[in-house]
Image 1 (cartoon, rainbow, N blue to C red):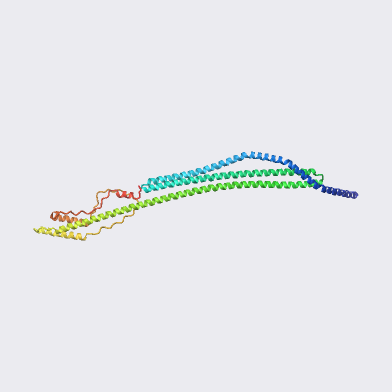
Image 2: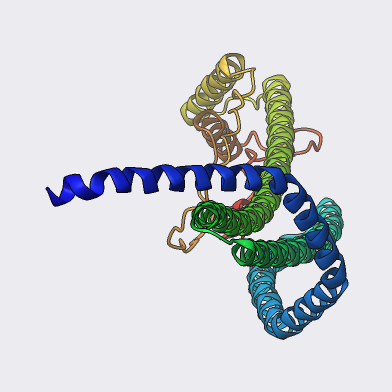
Length: 439
C-alpha cells in the first residue's frame, strides 16, 4: 500500500529527472565542441610555454647522466684495452718463443752442416742455406708487421663499435626522456579534464579516459621495456661479433704460423736430400776412380807377365841353341841327356804357358765400414805362380849342369814373377774411411 502510494510520485520524479538529464545532455552536446577546441588551444599554449624549459631541463639531465656514466665507461674501456694488450703480448711472446726455438734449431742444423762441409760444393750449399734463412727472416718480419697492422685495425674497429654503442645508449635515453615528458603532458591533460568535469556523467567519461590513458601508458612502458631488451640484445650481439672476429684473427695467425713452419720443414728436407745426393755422387766418383786404378794395376801386371814369358822364351831359345860340350864319359852322357830333357820341358812349358791375363774382377759396391781387428803383417805373401816356379827351377837345374850364363853372350836374366805390391796395414781401412766422407 505504501509502495502504491509513492509509486506514482516516483515515476513522476523519474520523468522529471529524465527530462532534466536530456536537457543537460543537449546542453553538453551544444558546448562540447567549443570546450574541446578551447581545451586544445589551452593545451597548445601550455605546451609552448613549458617546451623550452622542458628541453633545457632534459638537456641538463642528459648531460648529468653522461657525466655520471662517462668515467666508469672509460675505466671499463681502459680495462678492456689492457686485457687486449695483455692477450696480444702473450700471443707475441708465444710466437717469439716458437720463432726463437725454430731459429736455434736452424742455427744448430746450419752449424752441423757447416762442420760437415769439406769441399767447395758444400760451402755453396751453406751459402744457399744462409740466403734462405735471410729470406725467411724477411718473410717473418713482413708477417709480423701484417699481424700488428691487423691488430691495430681490430682495435680501431672495437673502439668504433664501442662509440656506436654509447651513441645508441644516448639516443635510447633521449627517447625515454621524451616518453616521460609525453606521459607528464598526458597526466596534465587528464588533470585538466578532471578539473572541467562538472557532473557524474562527465566524471564517468573522464574515468574512462583515464583508464584509456593508463592502458596507453602501460603499452608505452611495455614498448620501452621491449626497446631496452632489444638494445641489450644488440649490445650482446655486437660483443659476440667482436669475440668471433678476435677468434678468427687468432686462428688466422696460428694457421699462418703453421704454414711457415711447414715451409721451413720442407726446405730443410730438400736441403737434406740434396746433401745426400751430393754424398752419393762423391761416393760413385771415388768408386769409379778406384775401379780405374784397379784396372790400370791389372794391365800393368799383365804387361809384366808377358815380358817375363818373353824373356823366359828367349832364355830357353838361347840355351837350346848353345853348343853342348863333347861327351867325356858316361857321366857326361847323363848330363847331356838331362840337359836335353830340361830343354824339352822348358819348351813344352813355354808352349803351354797361359797367354791371357787373368780376368779382371769387377769392383765391389762400396759397403759400410766394418771394424776389424788389425792383422800384423809378418811378411809378403808368396805371389809366384806354379808354372813360373817350374821355370825358375829348370833354370837353376840348367845352371848347375853347366848351361848357365857363362856359355853364351850376356843376356838379362828372367825376371821373377811379378808380385802384387804389398799394401801397408790399415791402408784399405783408411781408403774405405774416406768413401763417404765420414769419420
